[in-house]
Amino acid sequence: MRMAFAAMVASSGKPFFRFGGEWSRADMVVSQHRIADWLKTLPRPCGLFAANDVTAELALSAAELAGIPVPAELAV
Image (cartoon, rainbow, N blue to C red; front, side, top):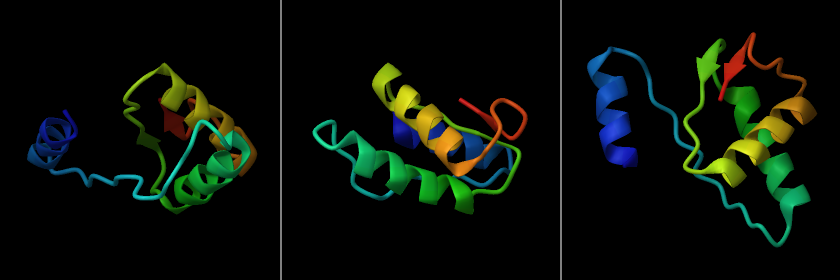
């Protein structure tokens, strides 16, 4: 699904960024900080496509940690 989504984004002329770091349900605090650091590097405003509800919830908590306002600067 990621490849199809990336292709759709590319066809619109917009950039596609993928979180390439590691995250784990076993250590959500560390994962939250890794994702927060990554979110800070993205252009804003931007949209985030999450693979599932757990990932979306983690991204939203990471955005809060990073001080990124949702949905003003980040849509999930």
